[in-house]
Image 1 (spheres, rainbow, N blue to C red):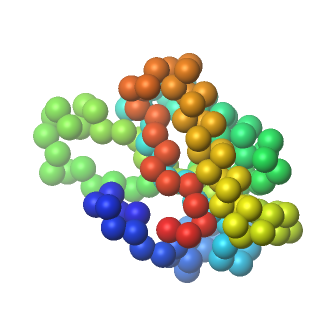
Image 2: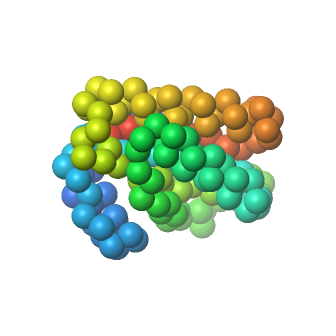
Length: 141
């Protein structure tokens, strides 16, 4: 998604390039990997690290593989002081369905479980207004 409520298909060639640049790997076929777009609270590295560890743990528990985190570049040069003070840190989390353990439908279901459990656990630990939010976690968009 682009944040405006419009959904676009996974930009496969772009994600493959970024995976190679950041992690030195070739992604599996489209539909066998997923990307999460995640907001973290601004200026709180401890909470960000704990939320990342939470997502990585849940991913492993579901039998999937965490590839890594990619910071999303932003151009916030037009923002004023107040928006800058509350701007979240945005990163992408790469996940792989190893050896096609799950069908594509099951893979998407497992990703949804990871997302929902991560959001619930983070809310119980940090509160519902913590700034941790998973915008998407799918292999589709």
